[in-house]
Image 1 (cartoon, rainbow, N blue to C red):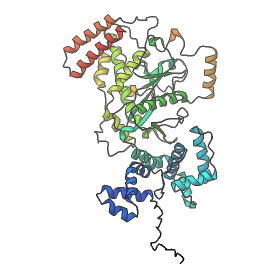
Image 2: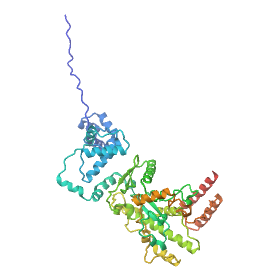
Image 3: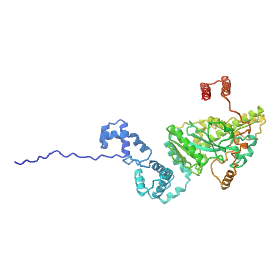
Length: 514
């Protein structure tokens, strides 16, 4: 008898296709789990297995980061990033800023900008093909629609105002106030006394005799006033005579023939700041003016540079709203006091570039957080996390100082306040903007070896030619410290100053023992 085959009546297993969830749905799932709902109920609602839900929670930070940073279309289901991640991030940020400014963007514009960013970021092998552009648009959910004719008028609107209404809040939302910085250059006649103010008033001073007396000072602070960047001082001489045997300065120092900011100095300084913030494991944004001396800087890892619109008013630059003024007023105050002290003690008044650097550093430390916060507020940088401060203007008590100076025989122009005296060099050119005549002058001075900065007999950094003082010995330094300690003991000191004196003595002993 032939055997009959037995067919298994049980149904074949159904192979279910794994369900893909969008980023938006994953955000909802994360919110549901964190609100305390049962995971089994959540998994059933979205038609996924428990292990899939666990995987979503495991990658919670990546999902939230992608959603909050707007790097991906919320409807996207995969978080696979592109090979040129930095390029895509730069391109998307540019696109969103263009949206804020009501600038219509189309495919050719995006392709041109992508190739431009690729070149600046060092991706020499990149070429924006139609395929890459289509994939990019798909990844970020971009759809280009034709613009109504009447919207063309929006592009002619005040771009500066639109920038401050839309673009600035975008960055202030992305960064905490402690990580928002503004930097600005200012010119300074560092030896300018009240009795020769009218020789300097209105000078732009890029070449000529008076230019030997000028430096450029670059200041920068964060938005909540908790951090001041080290000052950058730009002089004319890389190695002024007064810097002999000096191995460290309280400021960053650079030099060029014009004593102003150049693109090379700017790039070097930005890379130095970038390393500083990398060491602190921070990401910061620095707002800076749009000038030829402020180029886009490649390979910054912790610093994002944001340029003000080229037509923006100085009223939007925080450092110009009180910070620079406060620094200069304090500096002039100390300069006058130093001069009066010399007159009263019958000593010759001298001031080297090194003296000026030390005075600037001391004055910079004394600029208050209140002044900084007030300056940012007046520039339109608004944040709910920055506490409200008294908006009264910080002023130095200049009346007593001026009266004291006049009594000592110092010539002080009638009616000139300390603030007006401090502002007399505000018109100095501080950034590289050479005219044809200046370029010719620079070339001729270089070829003839008579640049303003190289003459030892007329050195910008030596206020008293031929009077070089020898370095003090260890014993002389300790004796001076002991004199300072005896003086300070007669004052009401706090513990921190006592500790500082002890640290100074330990440092002197340690250095001398090497």
